[in-house]
Amino acid sequence: MTISYRSVSGDAASGAGAGGLPDAAQWPEVAPPSAHPVLPSLVAHPPAERAAAAYGSVPRIEVIPPHPQHAIRALAHDFPSEICGWGAHPEYEIHLITKTHGSFIAGDHIGTFGPGHLSIMGPHLPHDWVSDLREGEVAVNRDAVIQFTDEWIRACMQLIPELLELDEVLRLSSRGLVFSGATAWRAADTVLEVVGSHGSAQIAALFKLLGLFARAPAEEREVLASEWLGRATDEGSRAAVEAGLAYIFDNLTGDIRLSTAARLAFMSEPTFSKYFKRATGQTFSNMVKKLRIAHARRLLDSTELSISSIATQSGYNNMANFNRQFLAEVGMTPTRYRQLESSQKPPPEVLSLGTKASELAPGSGD
Image (cartoon, rainbow, N blue to C red; front, top):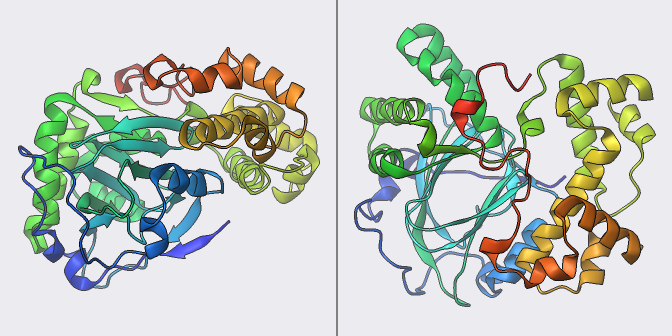
């Protein structure tokens, strides 16, 4: 896996760079291109090619160095920029889109976004937002982002019993949560308050924001990624899932063997299979198929690659087998899938998409 380092200056981390963010009640359209410190290689490529570059590889592991003067990070950044991309990191991330429309990915979920799109992504959940921009266009301050560690928020919860109401939201965020309705509208203002403030006022605003998330009605929050992504509950299951998924993602286009995954988890094949199925609810081979087909769907949605190229990049060297597996998983052929409008396409994971948070009582995912 690729490791990238995201560093934030003291000013940006404390919110000093947030002055250009729009008010949540008046989301503006995309700003015109201007002289800006973005990577030329990102700006020079259209959205489909940027998406192909992101989803054609495994997620980056982002290392975000802690800041000695700040418990959290709150910042605004442009799109494109060097800190955008398909990646994962150990911190929780609250993410507000202030302008543009496009597509986003959270784990194995693909959706669309517009101004006001508000989500929280749990630790290690791969995610990315790709705006539909004209070549050379820059969306200034597109993103308002808040990041904090599990260790920090859990320590706060131990000291402040009133924060225990956050437990369910933090648990569900392992699969990604998107908020809508009045919750999203109120919370968007609070995100901007966090990004634009400092010191104790900033922490108070964050607790207010997390409280809004915790008290959101079931119809105003939606779980995104498949249940298996956040379900491992014991050491053996977690080790099997982490080793198995890392191995699958690193070898998505090549030969994947159960024996190798078991060896990487330091387990016998029967033990690995038992723990992996306990955590995910699926066999290792079925998980490989699901992830390969999900990867193929991302490429069909976001690139103009030929179907044969997509089959190869998804680990299928036999077109007949690819078509058969795609049909079994999605209910239609790759050709038919590509012809459909986005609204007509089946959800990426029928077991989890559309599941409301209220349907997942504590422990139901164990």
